[in-house]
Every structure is written in C-alpha cells, then in structure tokens.
Image: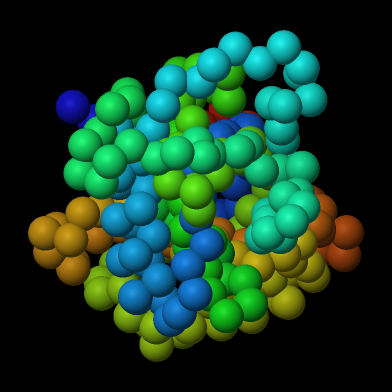
Length: 237
C-alpha cells in the first residue's frame, strides 16, 4: 500500500530545486537534544511508539480553544506550555503495552534544528484531524497543525550524513540568495524511506520556509534558472 505523503503544488523549478506550496498538515513531534543522527533515531522511536498504539483515544473537548494550532514550534516550558501544545496523557500505559489506536505510517520523517537539538516529526494521515487523532501517551510528544506554507526544496539521494545535509543546505541557501528569497525560519530535513532502502534509491529533501513568493526582484528565466511550473501541477511523490 502506498505511503501517505503531504500534497503540494509545484510553483517553480530550477534544476534540483523546487518551490512548493503545501496545504495545511498536522504533525506529531518531539524534541530531542543531540546531533542529527542520534536525535533522529531517538525521535523516530518515540513517534513510532505513538503511531503503534502508545496513545489514548481523544476525549471530547468542549472548548474549541483546546484544539490548538501553531506556527512557532517553540519548546514547551515546564510550568507554562505554549499554546501550540496539545497535552499528552499524564499517566502513560505500561511500557510495551499499547492500549490505544494504531495510526498508518506516513512520510516523510522530518527534523528541524533548534538550540541544542532537533524537533523530530511524523506527518499525520490527511484523513485525521486534531479532533480525531489519539492523544500521545508519551509526555514529550505533541500534536501541531501547520498552516499552508511555501518552501524552497532541494532533493537528493544517498546516505543521511551531517556533511551531506550541510552540503545540500548550503547549495539551497546559495540559490535562494541569487533568487532574492529569504528564509522564514529553520529548514526541515526530510527522509522518505526506511533504513533498508539502498542509498541510491532514497529520497531526501531539505525544505526551507520562505518569507514570500514570488521574489520581488527576480523574474523567472533569468540567471537564477527559475522556471515557472504549470499551475495545475500537484504532487505527493
């Protein structure tokens, strides 16, 4: 069965780089301190436990304000969680004993740098909402709805290594400077494939949020190599 992926519209292309417009999505995410690889592995384990049943069915919430949406992604403080935080269960089920609902696996797994670590995220299936998703039992997992956004994306294959990620991030940032595009925040490093997929077949991407599109000082087809894509192109490849 094909893995569910976020749908997007391709606004422009320049070689291996695309500018995309994504519809709103919901993510389950957790913050892990550490380097790219170890943080990703720990975050993956936590989120896998959530979609495998370490959760509880959401109770009805009368106050609409409890179904929270956010763009900031700031880490919750111990005494005062940000408004983006959907509270997890206070009494998790016994370890190794899933008591909740299974959620279909999706792609990609994302990592967004912040401070001394990374926010690691799974995209939730498009058929579910903040109302219908089960609440995480792990206290360090939260649910968050991301608004529609425009991003510059570079796609590459191979091993997911820090030096490789750095190389392609620099390539993307160099292209953005030439295209007069400004980043609206930190990028998301996205991995679409399980570990057993050969490196030459893997899909890896870096998604950089943009302040605005189209760029105000660059016309399609100039030295930056931007080519407008047909407005009808949508994808979840």
